[in-house]
Image (cartoon, rainbow, N blue to C red; front, side, top):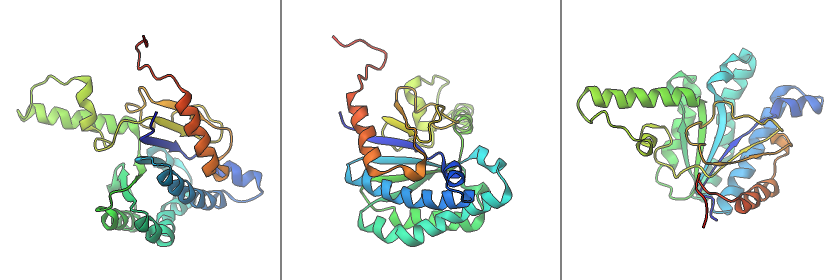
Length: 232
C-alpha cells in the first residue's frame, strides 16, 4: 500500500527544550534541523507530498518574542538547505494566508517557492498561518461567489469540494502523524483527514528521526483501509 501524501503536526519543541533546561526557542531551532532530516528521508522513501504544520492561525496568541523568532526560522532553513532541496528536485509550496505573515518572511517563502517551482520531485508543503476551519470558510466563500456570478449551479457534491481547498493540487491525505503524545487534530486539515490514517507518537518533534518516520509508514501499511465499506 503506497503512501502518497503524509502530513505531520510537529509538536513538542518547547516542552523538549524545557526538559533539557533550555529556552523554548532552542527547541524550535532543533525542530528546524529535524525538519530538514525528515524532508530528505520522506523524499528518499518516495512520498509525493509532505505537509508540515509550521505555524497555525492560533499560534499568533503566543508571545511576541516567540512569534518573532518563529518567523525568522524560514530564512535560516532556506539559507542553509535550499541548495540541497534543489539538488533533490524537491518543490516548495505553502498553504495558509501569506498576506498576514511579516513581509520579510513572505519574501523568503515566496523566493523558495519561485526557485523550486519547476522541480518535479516531492512537494514539501508548509502550512503557514494556516487553520483548517478558516480554509473551509474561504472555500465556501469561493464556491458561493461562483454560484452568485452564475459560473456554476448551486449543486455542489462532496467529491467536488476538494477543488475549493488550499490542498486542491495534491493527492488525498493518506497519513497524519502528530508528535509529543498529544492526541488531537488542532484545526489541521479537517476536511482532508476524513479517511486518513492517524498516528500519534509519544516522542517530541526534536527527537523524531527518519527511523521513526519509517516505523510510522510501516504501521500505515498494516492498516485495513475500508473507507466505510466492507471487504469481501
